Image (cartoon, rainbow, N blue to C red):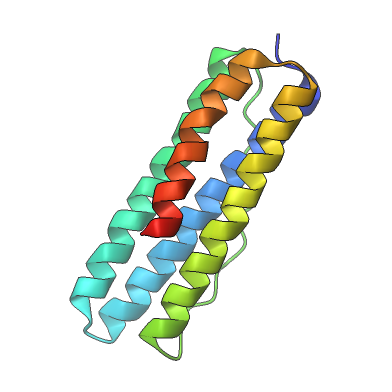
Length: 133
């Protein structure tokens, strides 16, 4: 059984993934406004991918009979001075998410929650790809 503490941590992270989706959608909107449609399309795809990550957490929480808890999503900034600034924020954000995933893995290991640790390993590998991209 997954502890309430772990369910709370998984819910918090699910909401971080929804924020990631929202952030990348804001970047897409910014680049569309600048007629940089290739960049806009790339960020739309990233937004969809992050939404999918959030839904994996949603599904797992339900699968282990936890209660999904959706929280307010903060509004991301809506403009960037340059393409470089947007991509730097993207990289910094992905490093932040990697740190959060690693913290979740540590918690799962501490609680000897092997099922959750196994679930999180997909995200550990995914974050290597995200940071490389």
